[in-house]
Image 1 (tube, helix red, strand yellow):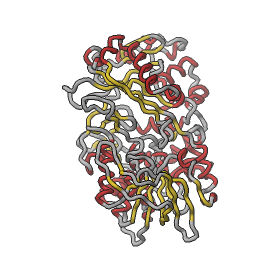
Image 2 (cartoon, rainbow, N blue to C red; image 1 turned 60 degrees about the vertical axis):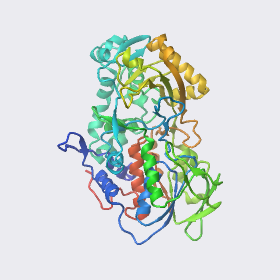
Image 3 (cartoon, helix red, strand yellow; image 1 turned 180 degrees about the vertical axis):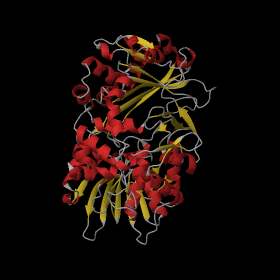
Image 4 (cartoon, helix red, strand yellow; image 1 turned 135 degrees about the vertical axis):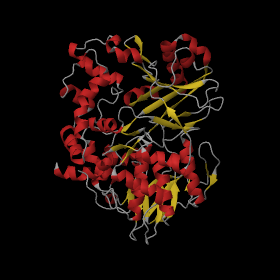
Length: 542
C-alpha cells in the first residue's frame, strides 16, 4: 500500500483546506496549492526560453484556460473541438424557451468556496452573479416519498412525519442527513492532512456507499434506504465511498452557491474571446481520430470532420478558423476529452500509452445524468406553494425537482428542472423520446403540485449527457477501488501528451476541477512543475 500512498499523496494537497475569516465575510482557502494556482491566474506561468508548438484537444474550461496560459507564455497554441460550440459541459439552453429565459443543461451552480473559478468570473471577466438557492430559505420545498408529502421544514423539525417504514427506535427522530453525517463525520475529521486522507482511503477505498452503510454503520436496511433516497445516493450507491466523502468534505454545511447572470456559458464565451485576442485558432468540428508519436519526438494528430466550419459559441457571434490539414505535428499535446471518447482514438504506437493509462481509459466509470426542463407561464411554485428556489425530493421517477429563480422579479413565467437524475435513474429517462420525457415529468410534477399546473405549461426540453456524443456521460465517477488503482495514471503524461479536465482533479464534475487541471497542465507543458508535483517547489502537507 505504501506505493499507492506515494502515488496518491500529491493529488490530495488541494483538498487540504484551512479556513479563516478574511474580514469581509466569506471564508477563503489558505491552501498552498490553491494560492499557487491563484497566482498563476493573476500573473501567468513562469518565464521559459523553450517555446513549443502545442495542440489543445477540447474547448471546455480546462482546454480554453490551458490554451490561454500557454499562449500568454509565448507558446504557439492551436485548439481543436469536436463540437460546433465551445464550452464542453457548460451549456446554457435558450431555445425553445420564451421571454428570454435560460436554463443550464450542465454546470448551473458554483460553491462560494471555489476560489479559482470565482476569480475568473468576478475578477477577470467581471461577470455578475446571483444566488443559487439549493433550498428554499423558508423550508417550503416538498418531500414526497412513499405517498407522503410534507414540507422540508416539517421534515427537519420532525423526521418521523415521513412515516418511513421499518426504522429501528434508535434510528427514528433523525433526518437522513443526520444519519449520514453520524456515519461519515469520523472519516471527514480524520481527513485533515494528506496522511489522514491516505489513511481513510487505505481503510475505506474498496467500499461502495452501500457497502459502507451496510457493513460499517450497521444501520438497518430501512435506514440505509432512507439515507440513500433522501440524500441522492440510491442511484450511485454502488460507486466509490471515497469520492462521496471527498464531495462531503469539500462542500461544508452552510456553503453558499451562485450562478452567472445571463448564463454559465458567458464564462466560456469570455475565455474564447481571450483566445481570439491572442490569435489562437479554435478549429471546430474537428474530432480527434489518431495520435501518432513520431521518430522526431513530435506528435502527429489526425481528425475527422475537418471541413471548414465557423466556430459558434452559445449566445455569441462566430469566429472563422481555417480548416487544418488532415494530419498535423506538434511538440506537445494537451488532451482534455472524456476517456470514453478517447477509446475511439487510435494511438500509434500503442505502447506509448502505458498499460495503466490504457487500463484507466478502458475501465474508468462515467456516470449518466439527465435533466428535463419545463417552462410555465406562471411561477406557481412561488404564488401557490410559497417556494423561492430550492428543490423538491421525491421517490417518483422525477427524483429531484429544481425551481429556478428568475433574474428579475417582474419576469413573466419561469422554468423548472422537472427532473434531475443520475446513473441508473437517468438511464430510464434516456430510453424515452424527448416528448415522452417532457410528458412523463409533467405528469409527476402535476401529481406533486396539482393538476392545475398543466394550464400554465408552455414548452419543455431535455438534456441527456449519457447520449451526448461529445461528453459520453456526465462525469467520471469512480467505482470502489478505482481511486487507488487509476487516479495517478489518469493524470500522468505519456511522453509529450498531457492530460487535463475535471476527471484529472479530485473536484470531479465541478468547474473548479476543470480550472485546476487547466492550470496544472499548462504548468507541466511550460516546465514549471513536473508530474506528479502540484507546486513549483516542494511544500509540506502534514
